[in-house]
Image (cartoon, rainbow, N blue to C red; front, side, top):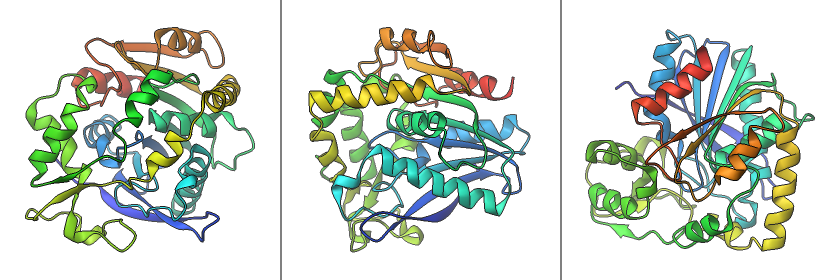
Length: 317
């Protein structure tokens, strides 16, 4: 497997700003950008398999951009945990797209968002006043909808920020699998590959908790920690039923304004995106196409070739 290149973009926030990392696959000279944004506790290297497939399908003429959302992976941790919110993340993506457009003008912009990444995508695709270099052309929403099931939020809230210290990457992978079986069948090799970017050597934290890019590897380490800021749980646990209802109404309003050709992918056993919500997404707004993956809950990882094929066909056929 080839490796992506690591880059950074400066982002504003009320506490003095932060730096967001992103991984770039394909050609830096391509005018076609596909942005892939991960879920709550994940990071941009989740999309390695999918990104390679997209580049191959495009014959190399595409830039696949996979950010580490603030507080995750190689990105800075935010000074104020209350800022770990979708509006801040969406503003960071606008800053990233502006930088990409300055480097190489964007003519076609596609977007795939898993879970939290999908919510960010609703803002980017549905908010008409955002200064995007191009409107989103094709939009893939992976296992999330404007209405998010409360039971899933409670389940996720039970483990976010609770990660421990692990003696090896394999031990960390085993611990993550115990709370991630809903991702569906993965071979041990596939899961270890997904997991290796989810941890950082404990000795290589910077002062604010982020890891240094040139020290992100490290085959040997005394112990390993999860890659993300435990404080991302603060905003999640502060969500009240009333706030969830208000947020859902806003997300439906954004969804209804989307004009991009849209695909919803769903784990058939998902507890976060109900089938009722997914079907509603096919009937309103952009009237999305819907593809469900049997034997998968929340959320499909696009490691399985059949899942990858759904994405590449939607983007290029």
